[in-house]
Image (cartoon, rainbow, N blue to C red; front, side):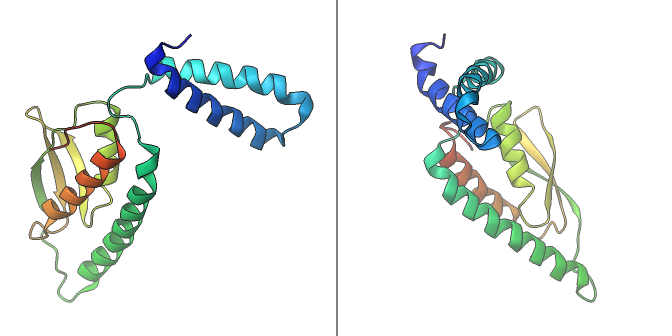
Length: 164
């Protein structure tokens, strides 16, 4: 049984899993008891494998994050294409390091995935001092500005307080 602090997460996850069951089975009345059992088991497993806590996703902030990421993704593709097909190509690849205060774990992994959508950047590794090493297509590009916007959007969409 989930603890009182995990109850909202358990209810939300259970509802999502049961909704998924209904979608996949066509909401057959005969299958509803099996769907409840499957949703309970999936919820239990998800709470054991990924307990709720700091860094959880705030569903209310996801639409804004999705819009920012969509804009960044299209912008990145356009920017990379313009740089690569310019004559001569405007590329000065290199490696940069940016400060990052997101604690190691799923939150940091999620941020690294989002940071890969910034124009001309690819996260390489986490450094022991908490910085993030990135490959940049052009080290003259203002990657820090793009990453600051991504950090701010990520901070609003998660329940962590510090994203440096």
